Image (tube, rainbow, N blue to C red; front, side, top):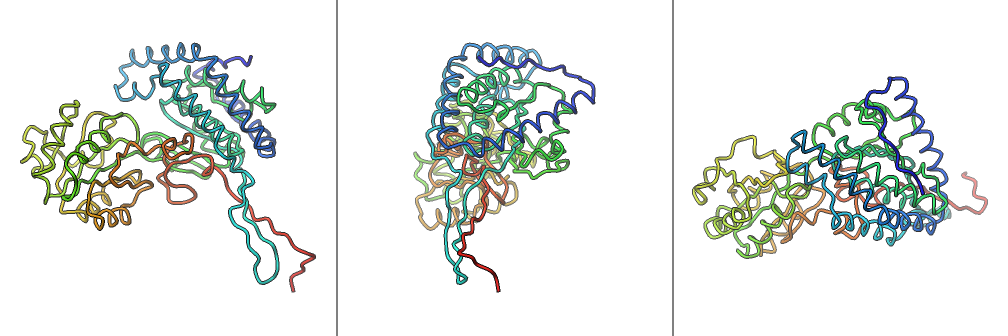
Length: 433
């Protein structure tokens, strides 16, 4: 059985850390070549083996997570971050189920996405290929370790994982199971590697690209992480900015539907990036709609911060400030504002949204289509909770995260989004005149 890696010293010498990080890159590059050429069946067997090994090691993973939680609690970690960090049997079963789903989805590598013959008679096909080596930097969500590894392998990519220091024990325990599944399938455990030190200098080495070993860098975390990556990275970046997500309730909305969607969007899990952070309500229907929504939110334990117009209808709400509108709370707090119809909502979203997920509740088809066409985000939903912003709910098996970029991939990033393509051109002795 593959052994779980041990935590490396927090402050290795600069030369030791650099050497260790460059070695990760070299091993990932070598493993990527073999993984990309492996058969789809081999990659499927590997991911299924990851799931089985993780199930077999469940007690070890939960023990490691309990130690992480204890240390985080002693440091005064915020409740929302503790929720992201926590694993229990049910959540770990969900992680294992996600791996099983990823094993079952079609392998994207080698799939023809288009084929045509231009006037010159050449047979041209566009074919999906692995990107190569991915590096993923993420914060205190140990489930990402498993999801990211499985999706990378499904797409034929090697991956270097750097999780948050607060969940390092959990991540190392999960990684041990993943490496075991790879070996059982005859693949190198170097296909999925993990940074074993808490030293933040390791991130700097990743941002520099490990001497050309990294093809794509994916940061998944708060604004400070993403901004550092965007400022310092010397490799291509697929950005995952925070989820400043809105639900707009139109005057035409059904009150019961609006209440249920808004409460779920905010309160199902407040710590996920798909949670709603601002409620926008049409002035024309606010008196009919907002009080009932507000009462349900408060009954669920949500604090409301409202603009003056909204506070006239929910006077016990806290007065919102300018700082509330661009804030990702990741807590049971919701900003509330009245707007002038769908165009007022779209104006507010254009100013404060992060491009992650936006939702509308309405029965007027014209209003719905206007919102869906004009809301600028990776995911836009009609009459559905923002908590559906999840690759698993999209049928991807899992996700690396929700991309807020406009290029290469946008929205949930699954296996297909972790591929590139090449053009395969077949001729019959063609020589260009």
